[in-house]
Each structure stands twice: as structure tokens, then as C-alpha cells.
Amino acid sequence: MREFVMPSLGADMQSGKVLEWMVKPGQQVHRGDIIAVVGTEKGDIEVEIFQDGIIELLCVEAGQEVAVGSRLATLRVEGAVEAAPPAEAAIPAAVPIPAAAAMPVTAPAAGNGHRIRVSPLARKLAEELGVDLARIHGTGEHGAISRGDVEKAVAEQRAASTAAPPSILPAEPIPGVISPPAAPTPDKASVDFQTGMRRAIALAMARANRDIPHYYLQTRIDMQPALAWLEAENLKRAVKDRVLPVVVLIKAVAKSLARVPQLNGYWVDDHLQVSEAIHIGFAIALRQGGLVTPAIHHADLKTMDEMMEALRDLITRTRAGRLRSSELTDATITLTSLGDLGVETVYGVIYPPQVALVGMGKITEQVWVDHGMIGVRPVLTATLAGDHRATDGRTGGQFLDALDGYLQTPDKLWE
Image 1: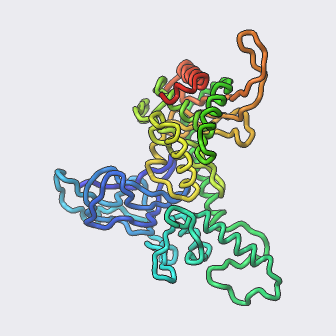
Image 2: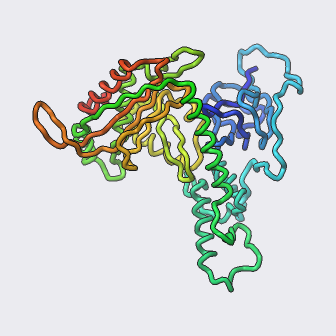
């Protein structure tokens, strides 16, 4: 028998709410299967199982708040030594949620009798705002309704209500339609989400600043070779298949980590644990505020097309609230790019237990001297925040040197 416990899905996550079970007792599961949806301050996360087996017991009901590390379920694994069934008192206590606040296990049926496909985050938002999901057209995979679809429906309904003359407004509220407030006020769900998100980020960054002795390095990189190479590659492609410059940067970071692996890993129990796998955490801004840094798995092994597709998919699912637990826990280093906002230099804070963060700014035209010749080049300022417990400035300098080298010879990134 194996225990499946509430995972830690963030540096300072203390507990999570089991919103929905995707499995039942007696069901066969395989490594990577989604078995539950857990609500956190950073959104609703699809939690994976990491072992093959059969679900023996679900120890927590949907709608309950559970501390990190507490048992959620038991798994029967072939060949494992069977233990006596746990006593009822041994099941970890869960914080009960009032019945009125409990989440439904499935979305309500539409008028034609079919079940509505909806992401957990969208379902929760729709319930909090009183929106009828049957009236919303989903734009996600297989017509699934995302958080963005709910927000769009609410905005359209409010715009229509606000634009109507007061004399024709209904005296009674129409189910599924949000009446405009007397005075403009933020949505409670939006405020709660932003407050929770900011709290989670504040706790993580406070811990990072308190526990991690940061050192910072920066370098300027001539991006002319990389941009010229990328332009030539994109000319061979249809517009919809063209590759963004950030894909080249992600790949360059991944390849540089392969050469300087000391920055790719975690600081755990006062020791550096270097990871063989390279999973780049990429900072993604959410529409409702806040940042999430899900991982692009095995970034060093992906082709250019695979990297572009992985990035596009990750951004879409992050903003739709459909991330997997492994994408929030597996990142071995974080890359944050603020160039699209005009920021030229980024000094980031390391996300524990990682030991490094790479910052990328805006590519700007700058005076550049090459072999005694003065010219103007597209220049990127790259920074590295390193954990001085794990590495030092020399190691960080080697990484930035490798990064520069790959961006001068971009064709080698995909070898």
C-alpha cells in the first residue's frame, strides 16, 4: 500500500482544497494520470499520480481543505507488502467547508442533456458570480469553457445591461445574468484571487530574501547573429508556424545549463541537489494579476518547433487555469523576460528551492565595438541571480559566457 499525500505546489503553500476527484476507489491508474483537482492561492491545479496502481481509498471528500503532506488517498501497488487498513482515527483531519461553498463534482447538464466541459477554475468563478454555464460558448479544447470564457461572458452581460435604458431594465434578475452594481467595484472573486495571489508571492519572496544570499551578475549580448538566423528560419515557415525570439532564449538557457549544471537544481537540507533533467520555469503573467512560473520540461532536448508549441500550450493552459502539478513543482531554474514591457534590465529573486534565476530585458539598439569597429547592434542585457550557498560568481560568469556563446552561434542550439 502506498500513500498519496497533498503535494506542495508552491514554496509557501500550507494547504489546498480538494475541488474534485477524477478517480474512484478500485480504479486502475498509471503514472502521469490526473487523479484530482486542487485549489490553491495561485489557481486550480490538476494533480498527477507518479506510480502505477489501483486506488484503494479516497481519504478526503471533495470540498475539504487539507494540509500539505496529509494523506489524500491510498494506492495498491503490485508487489508491495500489504499493510493493515488504517484506522479511522489515523486519517488526517481536513478542514470542513460549509455545504453552501462546496464545489460540484461535475458541471450541470446543458438543456440538450449533454454534460458541459468546463475547467475547474472557470466552474468555481461561474459559481461565485452566479453565471449560467449553459449560456457560455467554450473556446477551449473540445469546446471546454475556460476562465477567460466566463470573464468574457460577464463583461458582455454587464456591457449590455449598462447600455440599456433604465426604463427597460428587468425588475427581477435574470438567471445567469449579472446586474450592474450601483457603483463600479471590482469583482469579489477577482479581488479574492488577486489578494491570495499577492499573498502567496509575498510569502515566497519574503522567504527567498530571508534565506537565500543572492549574488547578481549581468552581461550585454549582441543579438544580431541570433535574430538574423531566426529571421532566415521564419522565412521558410507559414506565418502561424513562425518562432518567437524568446524560444531561442529559452533554448540558449537550457543548453548553457547543460554546460554549467551547478545552477540547475535545488538547495535542500543544506546541500545542492543538481538535477539531470533541465526544466525551465517560465514566468507567465495572468490576466487577473500575478505571475505563475510553470515548467517547460526537458527544454534542452526539444526541437525548435516543439519548444514553440510547448510555450504556446503552456501560456494557454496557465491563463485558462489548467496547469498540472508537475509543471508547478518540477522547474529547476526560472527564466523571466520583461522585454515586452520595455524593461531593459531584470534583477529577479530566486524562487526556492531553486538556486538561480535568469532575467532577460528588452532588445535595444546600442553602440557596439567589434574588432575596433564602431557600429549599432541589437543588444540584450541578461542577468543572473545566484544562490551563494550553492555557487559563486565564477560559476555564474561561466554560465553567462556560455549563454553569450550560444547566441553568437544559434545554429548550434539545435544540434
